Image (cartoon, rainbow, N blue to C red; front, side, top):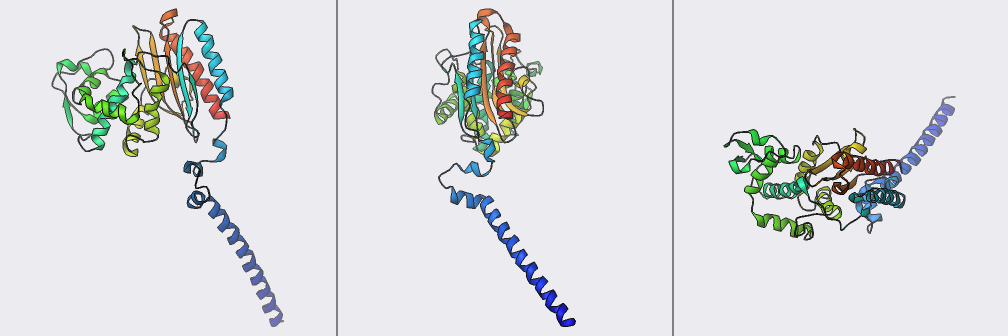
Amino acid sequence: MSKYLNQRALSLLTLLLFVLCIVLTIFYFRERESNPAHALETYSFINPTRNLIEQKHFFSTLQPLREDIRNTIADYEAEGYRVGLYFEYLNTGGNISVNPDMRFWPASLSKMPTAFVVMKKIQDGDWELSNELVLFEEDRDNRFGMLYTEPVGTRLTVEELLKKLLVESDNTAHKMLIRNVASTEFDMLIEALGMGELFDKEYDITAKEYSRIFSALFNASYLDREHSQMLLTYLAETPFTEFIDSGIPDDVVFSHKIGEEFEKSVFLDSGIVYVPNRPYLITIMVDTSANDGGVEKAKEIMKTLSEKAYNYVASY
């Protein structure tokens, strides 16, 4: 009986070892296939980001959205409004551009190049975020923000000024920063990004060309990842939600910059919508002056277009 039991135990042990070998073999090959290093070796000619995001997030066509957006903008144009739009699905680079050559007064969107130049000085070690700048009388600008109410001689750190610039869109903070950087530093930025057509002689911009600023931030192609992340974090904290943000659910992060010029009836918004695993860049510029629609019409137009973009990306 003891010999029989020993043989049975040995057989059972052999079977268990065999099953364990099969399981380990399956596990090994599954891990090998999902290993980024193996994937990089196997698909060496393919964009390496494809190894980090599931295939379902790389949908192939934007044509239904493209037609919908173009038709919607055509309807607004028939009412007399000028609308420029650029959309890019960042996983694939697929994009939609409507009126790519139509120019608009940039208003506060012009603050983004300043933020780039300042952050580049920090990245290069020329400045530190803790450095302080002094408010001069000539810096005061009451058109946007509240920093102008502070007394002359007030000292603020570069970090504080950047936050006021990007979160609050403060004009006085903008002037304080511009006064302390050289025009050649802006030239270097424009040249590095290949954006010689960003501004025309009237200083107007297009939605398509301006979008390259946010593309450079997302890809950390001008600033490094640390400093690009810092700017995008500030931009995600802005309280201005009445334009593109109004067409996006509250729980979706939107890093963006708005611009408003009420005298010209020009309203703008540009940034990155962080739908989980499906980020996209969107810029919308609206001129309501011809039909006296004002900011309320701009809000309607941007919300409508933003909702279409979000719903397509989120539900595809």
